[in-house]
Length: 152
Image 1 (tube, rainbow, N blue to C red):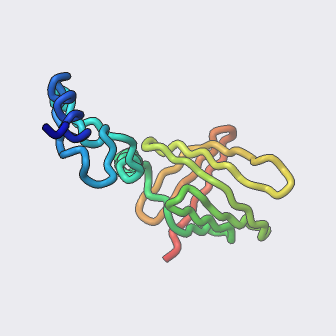
Image 2 (spheres, rainbow, N blue to C red):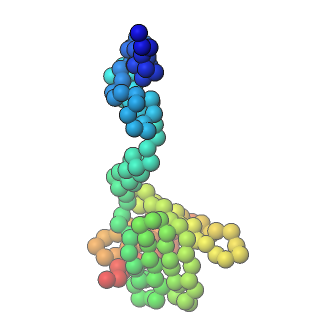
Image 3 (cartoon, helix red, strand yellow):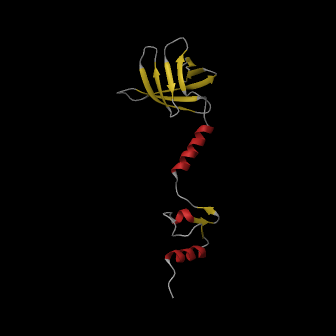
């Protein structure tokens, strides 16, 4: 009598232990973990696409004011450009350009990390609000408010 294949032996062992196999063991390059059902729950490994989708849903549900785009300070020449990837570029009224990263929570609290060559990053905290095409930034550490108009 011919001995059972390794696949059939593993299948019997899995059945005796209370696990059920979702597919025969000899199909494709899938590991045993991705095909095993234990107590009615599918057991699987880390999948990068699922992690990205979860991150995207969390970020999109917890977003604050829509600041992405280009802005010009009202009555002045300073400009800001916020990107979806959390980076920004700014040019002040004297023409000095800076860039960096920003974070914004759903309440409008903003943290800006300004990158300056040869220096540690400068952190500015404040509160941002957008009404129509106007952005207002209020600094946390002093009573200064800046107003910007969205550029088309």
